[in-house]
Length: 304
Image (cartoon, rainbow, N blue to C red; front, side):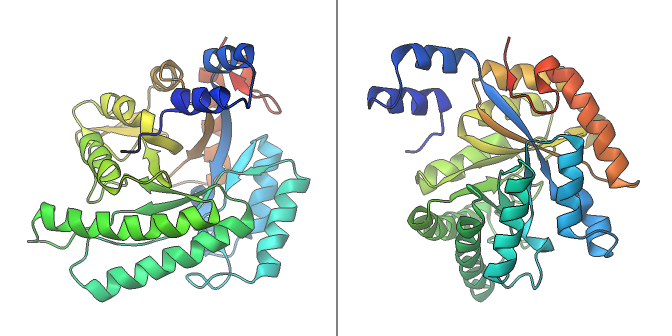
């Protein structure tokens, strides 16, 4: 059974002689958090043609992000894979701007009754695993999907598990981690998310932890439960207490993240009405304030 526990992974690497004992204790004591921008934030301006993908990436660099998540929807010709030349163009741009590519993502639905549609989405994900590898994205974000009505949950679980396992085998061949996002769809609790991950039982499938995807009495408890399985995030302005949208308690959230020793990217996403450029600027300022001085542009975010 695969459980993404960053402390255990680090310790395993160190035992293998990758790092010294002193480096291990220092790394575990100071979780490294890097701010990324999920480009779905700019969905409105990208789909209307008001900004290009390249312009959005430039803007993220201006804001001082350390990474970007260029969602697959915004590549020319999606859902078909983009031309290699275009992939390399985006890869080169990000590198010259000093930006990492923290991941990318696609649309899929493994919770529909039509097996031909599920199979088509498996092939779609496999194609984009290769795109992610070419792009240098370590993570490809995928979904369980929105279930058809009247079908038992246990039956849909079987479809989701089987298809994710199939895709994870391909992901392992290309060195890309599939990250299952809890997106207020078929999966809306940490218990269900973890159950799916355990059932697939692959080192190439983990959690893309969407803090707005849990509509429970206490989403922060669900977030804490899922952190050991997380390799990427969707940090949003709001969480849902049951179905009540509430501003995210960022100090509480980051306290939970640090307590559990997560190391890696924290992609931010803003949604709703308004200019996404201004909305992200404001949200990024709030995030930096909550994280402290080490989150200033150009700095790694480390726990004091």
